[in-house]
Length: 563
Image (cartoon, rainbow, N blue to C red; front, side):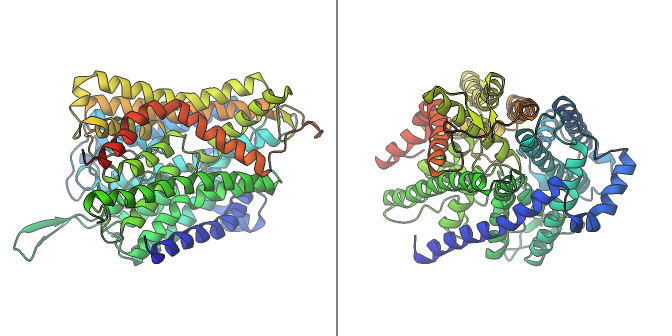
């Protein structure tokens, strides 16, 4: 790695932080609905939506009503995407005459985009019509991201509430986030990306002759608009099968930087929005520091692995599967960010990463994608770990734990453990079932530890709602389409429902004044404890599996054995 590569990483970090701070303030104003400027600009659009849908955005919901509204809304989104795929051959905006999608694959794709996973067991440019991509997948990119922010907002209201069962209004939250945040961001990003050469057209695929005289099909479509929201909303679902490694999705170094910046921008902004909403910027600083430290550790391990592994090739960089236009550092920086952000987009093939770099990406997902996590989802996942850390510290001193002045009791910890353990259980059980089913093992392209890594990555990506893949695994089979679809549902809603239950439980409590025994949660000491809990929980849960996959593959690679 040279000085230019190091400067690019530094510039990326500085740009991310400087942009996330004001965006966090803007997001907090959106969620609290206190900005007159936002109301003047976006109010007419929102009011028309409320009138059309019969919504009273000021009506407070308890956590059960909020959860029921969220589940019904997401089910309808799933149904819309599922039916669009089944009947796309009879609908307009299908210039390439794409046929109906096979039902099991349609189920997997509909669940994937509804849960903000955006796992793709299909090639978008050959399997889906423009209408399905725009009215189905792109719409869910907005709504699934807005759902995550809504849950985050509801949880913060519960933590900050004083003897109230109300945690906000789901319909008002999701409308404001979509209209005031996601749409403007995506519109601006789409204009920039289209200006960089990302394709945006309704024309059918173009057929041209190459210099060798061979006919080649150039896939087209309204890609720039979908790429903008896939990155801004931590979705990751590419318009093309190769995702952001495709030159029509990511044509220039500037488009690469912008897409990579959008990976973490809104998730990082959610941290600063939390500080604003909690009226305690110290909480935001500590959480951002913990997220940044763990992300930087994963990036450092990945870069070390990529450049130390080059000794096996006589000092040459490991370029197989990397983005040759942008270099190793850009491929590794993207991989570290997309797996930390619950995004899942790629500009290189993760299966081609060196063993420890692939293992770091895998471990990022296994941690629950709370560094920085998805839009909203990363923050409510991180708050589960915060409550767990507070509880463990309380046990050590023999005192009832408190967070933001409220006691954390048995009910809250039960919900915390359900939200943290459920995705991990799905990963390990799913991987074990895969190893026991011969038809599932037949999908592997690699044997040995790399094959195990492919299996672990698929189940982790689905359960963690990430969507990226070790591309050597053929996941378009009934076993994986159904199994991974179920994993996505559990990974999404087995975390959301406990978070909303915690919001309801904490909201009715009265805050207590701080005392000499109160654990400060805005100090460096607490930050170190929080990071340790996150890594230890992830390590204890997954280290045995990781040691049989990426770790042993790394050791064998140093001996010259490759897979």
